[in-house]
Amino acid sequence: MTTFDDREKGFEAKFALDQEQEFKAIARRNKMLGLWAAEKMGLSADSADQYAAAIVRADMEQPGDEDVFRKVAGDFKASGLTVSEGEIRSKIDELASIAREQIRAGE
Image (cartoon, rainbow, N blue to C red; front, side, top):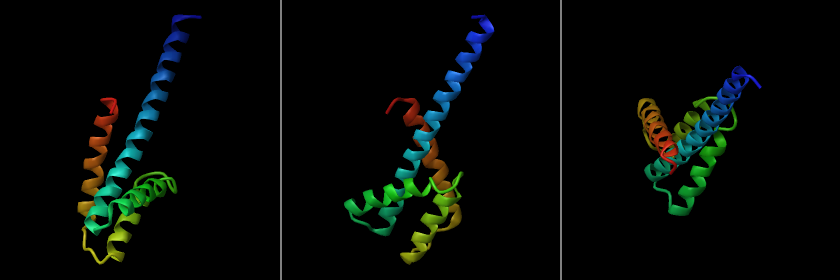
């Protein structure tokens, strides 16, 4: 095997690891977002956990964050809460940063 082949395998392994970590970070972010939203809606602890799991599942519907945003925004509206689009999107970004740091730290 040549040095080039070794480098290529190294890059492929790093890419796979980065993709796996990003997937885990997004799933963690979605869970934290679900718990945040559940708290705002006044759900019980058991209901909050179930709601957070529903948010994680909602992200599997389409690529990107729009499916998660629509679910949370729709649930807030259905609950009679007025939460701005900016507040939800800001919380998504904030929690994404926290989740990525936690995953990198091995938490």
